[in-house]
Image: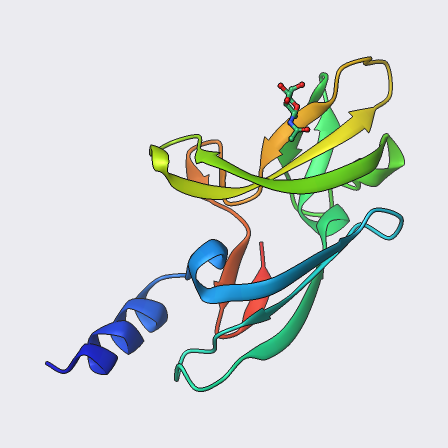
Length: 131
Ligand SMILES: *[C@@H]1O[C@H](CO)[C@@H](O)[C@H](O)[C@H]1NC(C)=O
């Protein structure tokens, strides 16, 4: 099998990792919208895509957790993204994380965007950021 074929199979067979298949990330801390350019399934070029992280995370029990339509932004602010080791696979497999200042806590609250509660959460599905 040619290398390009293998890559296409990988991308179509599973939801692709955003850190390895998307670029030019930007995050708006006011709207909580994450934007990026992501490779689609056919591996041709990049697709501009955006995802409101309120659709993906909730703030509950002092933690930010993966939850559809969780609206964490009602309780958290000043969020920023950074790259750090994957919570499941560890170094050197880095992934995207988000830290926020949330209601009732002085320290920032951290959450992994990609591997939350041990499963893939925010991913690249055919060039689109989804959770
Ligand atoms: C994110 O928050 C955690 C937990 O409070 C903290 O240990 C870490 O230094 C923060 N990282 C960044 C990059 O702000």
